[in-house]
Image (tube, rainbow, N blue to C red; front, side, top):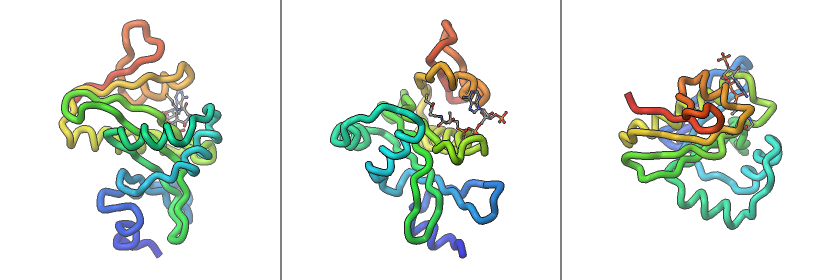
Length: 162
Ligand SMILES: CC(C)(COP(=O)(O)OP(=O)(O)OC[C@H]1O[C@@H](n2cnc3c(N)ncnc32)[C@H](O)[C@@H]1OP(=O)(O)O)[C@@H](O)C(=O)NCCC(=O)NCCS
């Protein structure tokens, strides 16, 4: 049974339980649970990204402003099924990188939930402008979430604090 205490213990106080169409499937967003580098590598493999040396990935994560994981909840072994991270000064500017949802969990609103979670955290920091560099095939995803495209409308998108 899912209890707030158990979820807090596994994912930290700021976790967010996501609504899923399957009552037996619980997916949880957290910026506090540590990201396992091997699990992250598997997730990146699953979405078809080329591998990066783990020591560089570790450093990149350490130097990031925010690291968000989406976990398939399991009381013994939660599985990382989504990820995003941000770099920036933590006050004025932030940039979102490495947004991924495992293909098994795509198309169910998890990408939207992940991005909302990221922006909620950046809002708390009162960051004024957020940018990202979208791959051409996902520009429409960010547009649908309300991101503005840069003038050439190809890769870059901006989100401005209201
Ligand atoms: C892009 C990605 C994160 C979207 O995750 P997801 O969980 O499938 O997205 P959601 O189900 O929350 O979709 C939200 C909306 O965006 C739309 N959408 C999803 N992927 C899209 C795409 N590639 N292009 C246009 N629209 C897209 C959905 O149809 C949905 O629209 P709706 O609300 O009108 O129904 C996921 O497909 C992914 O990880 N892709 C591989 C990695 C990648 O390319 N990352 C982006 C790097 S910049």
